[in-house]
Length: 292
Figure 1: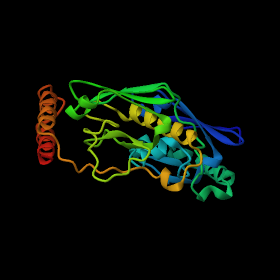
Figure 2: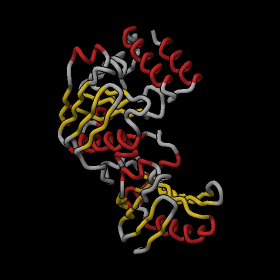
Figure 3: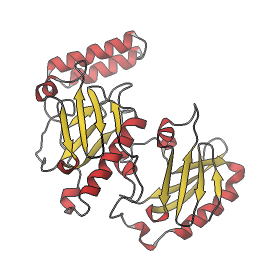
C-alpha cells in the first residue's frame, strides 16, 4: 500500500506484506505502547479487520490477530484493557472514510487461512535481555534461560528454602501470565512434565513470581512473558499437541500463616503511605485472611 495512517497513540505504515505500527511517546500514552516502541505485523498474522465507533467522537480501526500468531497477545490471553490493545488505532471521527478505505485494503490482503490458528509465531516478541521486579523477586531472561532471584522482603519461606531459580528454555512448555492489574497476578513458568493437580499457589511455587501494587507492571512483565513464550516455541517448533497446551496448575494448597501475616504487613505499609484507601486495604486484607 505504501501509505501512512496516523491516530492518537500510534502511526500505521502500510507496506506490501505488512504494517509497521509505531507507537507515539507521551505522558498520556499507555506505558505498554511506549515499551513496545514499534512492531511489524505481517498481514498473514491477521484474522480479521474491524472498524467501529469509538468514544468521544472517534473511530477505531482494529486489526484482529490470528490465534497463536503473536506471542504478546497469546501471553496476554485476553487480559489487556481495551485502551492498551496494540492492534487498535483510534482516529478522529472525521477520518472515518479514510479509515474505512484502509480497513478494506487490509481485508483484501488477508490470506485464505486467516480464520485458522497460526501454526507458529508470525509477529516478533520483544528481544531479550529483559528483566523486571516482581513482589517477591527479580525475573531476568537472557534469551536462553529465565532466572528468579528472591527478595527477602517478599518471597515466601517455601521459595527461600528452594533458593534462587534458573530455567533453561528447553525445560519449559510455555508461560502463564496473570495481569498485575488484577489482585494476586503472577508470571508462572510451565515446566515440561509438570502436570500434577493441586500444585502450589504462585507465591509458593519456585517456578513463579507474584505481582503486587507497583510490582510486575503490564508494560514490563507482559513483554517478558511474550519473549519467553516465543523462545520456548522456537526451541520446540513442532511439539505434540498435548505438550503445547499450557499447564494449568491449581493453587489449592493452604497458605502459610506467616506468609499471610507478612503480606498483610506489606498492605498496611502501603495503606499508611496513602497508596491504598481504607476500603481497598480492608478488602485486600479480607481476601488474604480468607485463604487461611
